[in-house]
Picture (cartoon, rainbow, N blue to C red):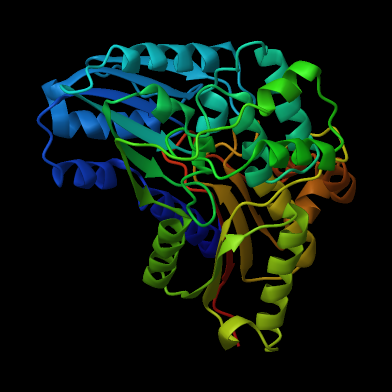
Length: 423
C-alpha cells in the first residue's frame, strides 16, 4: 500500500476517534448536579457508547436503563441496562419493542423524584418506532422504503415519519408527562435541527400534517385512509419540563479530519459541512477539484500539493438499478472515473457510523488505478455504477473501507487527498 493510501486510512481513523461520544456525554453530565433517581433511555447507532458514558458518571444513580441500537452496534452488558437491537434503515418489530419498553419505563417514573435522561443519536428514526393506533408497522416500513428508494431527503422523510408515530415529533417527551427530561443529542443532520435528528422525539414539531401529506404526494406514494387519518393527528407544538443539548456534529468530524490531515503534512481546507445532493455528482465534483489542483488551475483557496479538500454532509442516491451499495460507496466509485490514471491522488467517502447503507462497509477509498483493478477482475465499472452496485465494484478493486460499527454517528466525511508531486 502506498503512503497516500495509508495516510487516508489514518485520517479516517483519527476523524472517527474525534467524534466518539464518551467525552462529550461525560462533560454534559458532570456539569449538571443530578440528585434524582435517573431513568436512561438511549436510542440510535451511538446509543451503547452514550449509555456507557452516562453510567461512568452516574453509576448507581441510574435506577434503570434501556439501549435501542442497530444490530451489531452494542458492545456488551451494562449494569441496570436492557439492550435491544433493531432494524435500520427500515424499522422492524424490535424497533416497536424498544419504543414500547421506553414508554413503559417513563410512565413508571415519578414526576417529582425522577429524572429521565434521553440519549439520542442518528438512526433513531428507524430504531425507535411505535405506529399510531390503527396502523401496522408494515405500512410504515413500506412508506419508508419507498421514500428511501425515490430519493427523499432526511427532512422530508422525517416529516412523514413523525406524523405516523407515537414516539416521534415530540410525542415521546409528551409521554414523559411532568417528569423532568434531560436530552443529550449527537447530531447526524446538517445544521443540527433538534426537531429533525431521530425525527425529534423530544422536541416540538414545527412540521404540519399538510406538509407530511405533501411529501407523499411529491414522491407519488399511495397511502390508505388509515395512514391519512394518522397523519392528520397533529404533533405537539410545545413541550414543558424538557432541556436539550447537542454534543457533537459533522462540523466536529470535519475539524478532526482537518487536524489529522495537517498532522500528516497535507494543507487542509474544509469546503463544506453541509454537502448534499446526488452522491455520484458529488464524486465527480471532488475528482474535478483534484485535476484542477494538479494542473495548477484555479481551485478552492488556490491549494497546492500536498493538500486536502474536506467536506461533510449527507448525499442521496436515486436508485436506478438493483445493485448493492450505499451513498458513500457510490460517491467514491463515481469519483474514480475522474481521477483515472492520476498519481498522487486518493478520494474517500465514509459514514462515521461505519455502516454505509445496508452494507458492512463504511464507504470507499479510490485512486487512479481503481477502475483498472475493477476491469482486471472481470467487471465493467460503468455498468456497476449504473446499477448502483458500488459495493461489488469496490470489493473487486480492494477499495472498500471496513471499520465495523464505530459507536458514533455524525454524518459522512469526504476527503480529496493530494500528495507531494515529484518534480
